[in-house]
Image 1 (cartoon, rainbow over the protein chains, first blue to last red):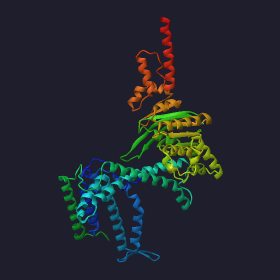
Image 2: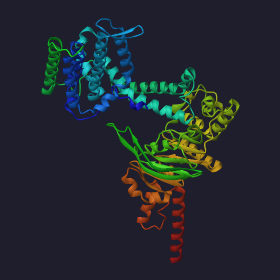
Image 3: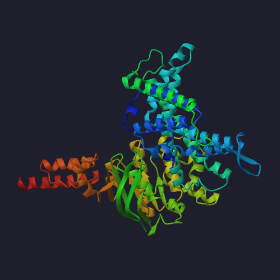
Image 4: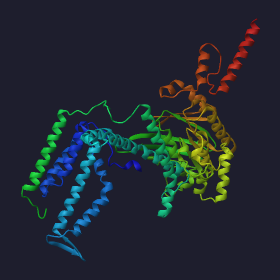
Length: 274
Length: 291
């Protein structure tokens, strides 16, 4: 049941995208996300789609797996579309239901918003699919390291992030185990009204908290036993080093952003209202 | 009155990169009242197998019958199945949550819909069965020692009065004394109540001492399914899959190689001792006659 959530998961495969430096992937994902908001015409979206399709192909992550990651945002997507569709003013009225008008401008924004959101989620989940949580926090730590000058505890933040990420699957597994153990003792987790349901979570939450704290203490002790004392003077076993392919990835992304902006903003091209 | 599995397959996370066939065409029958041991290397599918028996995991394909009825058929009362087939997970103390031991043990019977008085009665009976000291009944389960926590958690399942008791490594992490205590009590329960007991364990000594049938799992399949003597006679093959025979088996084989006429099929310390004593007596008599 809990295992089915794919968003934010790592998908092991051997692709060029998996081998890229995490810093490149984080920065390029940011460029890509910003680029989605820089163009106005359908041509821009076409360029973005081509780029996204190419990256997905390169990543060797099955499309089905990526699409599955969209499931949790379906509700959000629908709400966005409905609000944009009915509440955007301007343009000519296409049709009217009672007091709700659907205008060309509304339809346009709704469709673009939906496509944008889907591209956004697919692009950013592609980053987590191809980067292990450890590499990701490594990348974040390096990217944020200039902030150290402002006395921001960058290493500590990164360490906490990687511990938190590491604990997600452990706690999920633990939850699964505790749920099964309580179901085996006849616990009923599904039926009843909202108050009964909340009450039925107690036999799961109490052991879960107890075990989370136990694990936290154990981990802290293990870290101290290995003389961990924060980031000061700490070196890396595998320091991040840019390779030619990383520069190439930057170049490709910058080229894409430039192309998308030029084509999407300055090339006059309109199909019907889009 | 039995549990029967027919061609059960189970695949974890199908159609993803993490896909794994955990069970591979398992067919077996466990009659009521048997004491069965399940052994296997880590990841051999033991835990997955036992979670099928009370319907916690649904097989990818295949059928399971409890008392002749298919547990996957529409409308099968899975809740009843779970109160008849009690499952004690590994480290069961991690499931304790109530404010007192007695209340925690009452959780199972209360879920069966019994009245409070009946729940308390059953809880006390179960706690007594596992040898849990009376003075701790009203203590918080989190303040107990490891061994006592384990007993309380096992009592939590026993209080439902299951007809089949499945234990996944009930003695992992306990000291030898606590281990023997708990296993002896379970063996007594089996003798007195005609309860089916399915014991998953890594200790070949424990398995040899208590069970009447061993199911050896390897890579999701049943490798051997026979009485202990026969299973442990394949000790070389068992070693090949990361298992072993009880230590006495090795001693008996070594003695036989040195020319002593001992019974190499002995699997428990007691059997081995008897066989060695008999052999020594016979050899002694022979020497005496010769002199």
